[in-house]
Image 1: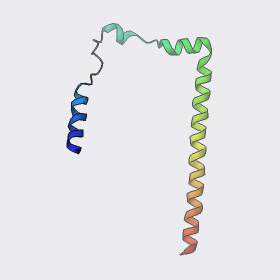
Image 2: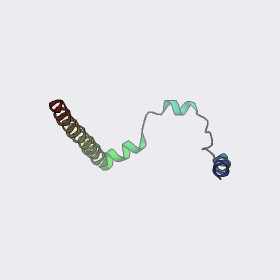
Image 3: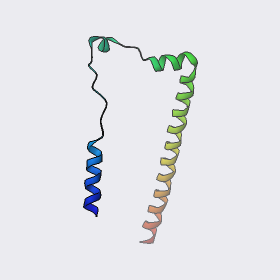
Image 4: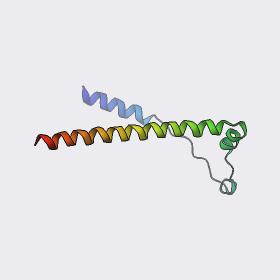
Amino acid sequence: MKKLIVILFFLVSLQGMAQEKIAITEEDYQNSSIEMADVMRSEGKIYVLVGIIGIVFGGILVYIISTDRKIARLEKLVQEGK
């Protein structure tokens, strides 16, 4: 039964298609503007994005520091027990 399921998944995955390849032109290399960033900056939304990224980074940093302190406390308890 497992072999049948695996074969079925392989056959289904063969039907998956990637995006069509688009030719890269010389204009693509000369383009230095990023439309999404320009629009977000002009509407003031870029600051919201930077704030959210800062909050997420801060949360990850707090989580790592608290985990490190807990591990240090556990290591100290293990060392005292020996």
